[in-house]
Length: 181
Image (cartoon, rainbow, N blue to C red; front, side, top):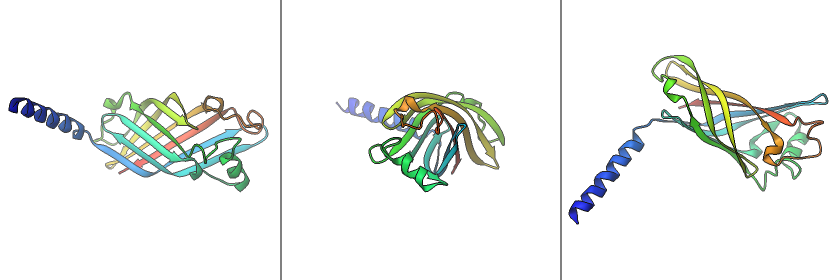
């Protein structure tokens, strides 16, 4: 019995050492922008309250409150958060959880811009879809930044307001940036 308890304890110690062996970088002031362009109108908004975590092993996560997006035009912000589009009261947050598939190419000890590919699940309005995006991890004087730009289709996330396709583009350009501590 003591031998079993010792082996279980040893296994837990080994698992915990493995969990703590990776370095975790984080920020609560990441930024996500979106941009829509049509013949009728350009629409852009920014959210500077994005929580992100990234490990040196490649796990990555971004989370934000939808109501954190700020528009130049207050009426656009109301429509965006309303029942025809984001339904922010019902679906208050969006998130991405995934992995940087080529994290071994990033040298955290050497300044440079390292091309990366992230793959994971993007959840918007309670709908989760697989998403892949190319990006960069930039190391400069020991500071770590990440940047990626990709497009999503609004219909993939159940966003079907009356102006989609005319005033609002069917495909939205998303830009994600983070400076990690």
